[in-house]
Length: 248
Image (cartoon, rainbow, N blue to C red; front, side, top):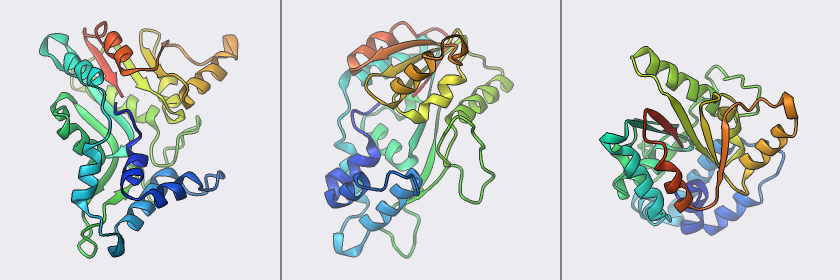
């Protein structure tokens, strides 16, 4: 939703040296992304930096958030739209809640599925403690598509839809908005009546192109639409206001 990646944005604003370390990390993926952000938040909380909760909150409130995206979300949340909006994110609860509260959008979402983060360390009160959604000691999700260890977005999406179905709510279609390679698994779970809104020039676009190159062997069943700017998303949202679940 925001115009910048919140994980990177916080360090760009508060500690560019840590942001550089994140950028220059080894490419062998020896450190899982959520664990890397957690370690970076620990470094950010060092007493010499004098950075605490108010500084992180201020940085998150400054993150660029396009007015068209905000209007589009508000439109979907209108009671006449008959639409359910869900967040499925590899960020964390504190970042997401802070951004949405500042934009007055928190009540628009039925559920937020993400990693947990809170200022919960009594010894280091300035440290934002971040935990994987699927922790190191939890049973692994065993995704075969390539999701990171902290979360399989495909499984999370299916669990949410199944839970809704068991409570008596079904969706005519799902509109999934994504940009990263970690969204690809969820896209493969979408049905022919569903739609993915894929952001241009990001990892998900490459994944979709590679999958479609397989021709008849492609596992993609849903409709694929592309966007670059938030104003395009707002245009598309106008068409998805009838018994639709929108997942970002």
